[in-house]
Length: 162
Image 1 (tube, helix red, strand yellow):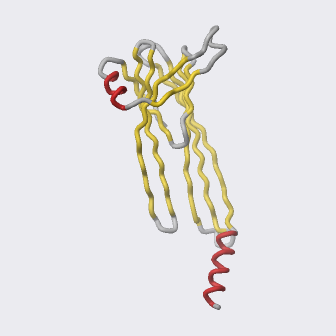
Image 2 (image 1 turned 45 degrees about the vertical axis):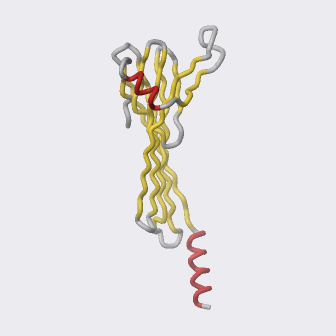
Image 3 (image 1 turned 180 degrees about the vertical axis):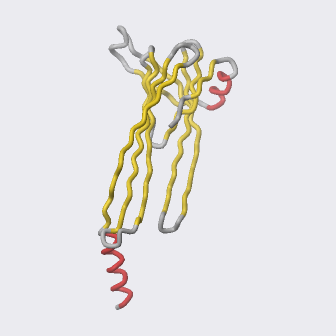
């Protein structure tokens, strides 16, 4: 009976949590040597779950998302959750992008943190026409060897991170 009562009490405490979420945005721009300018925006979201009765911090989750625009070409990129742009290769009309995806998992109850980092490589595809008013632009995934081969002969610029 004591085990059942303890289990019920723990369930009630776990259900009675309040979550507070804060969102922060930061922006930065940088001019590259080739005359192009990059405008980077980062959105951070921090969610904290507190026990309603005890006020104890049960869980904290931090997520972020990057996006950037390159002018005057009007190139736009929106990253996935936890994806950070690292560098851009300008190869004539081609544009290649290297990102890292970082996933941080924290458990405050067990006091553990797990970080996974994985590089990704993309190629920019511009299918816009008539003064870039119609059509679409997007990034496709490429192999790391293709990126490395181009890196030897192209201009690599680093994306400012926050």
